Amino acid sequence: MLGVAQIGRRDHFFELGGHSLLAAQASARVELELGIELPLRALFESTDLQAYAAMAGQHAPADNDARLDALESLLDEMEIN
Image 1: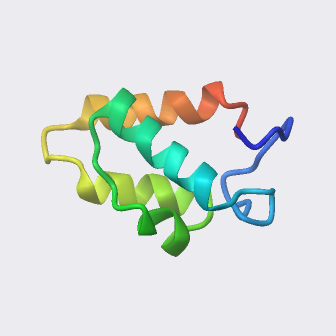
Image 2: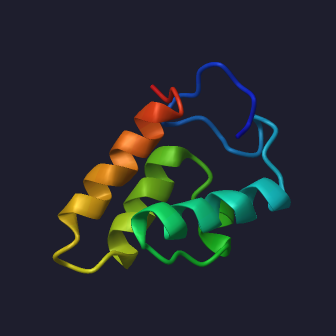
């Protein structure tokens, strides 16, 4: 999505080249693939991926551990360390 070979969990989304359109795409992908609806502002408020995943956990239903595991797998697929 960002065209960066490796991204750390604490890297800043916007410093890596992220912008509002990519933030919207990321939000849509999380909703589509995981069924977790996050407001677009979530990525602006939690700009590192670890914080963004934590916010996703706050918005996920209590019985949604499988979706949170899927988010972790999605981050891994994106070559995030």
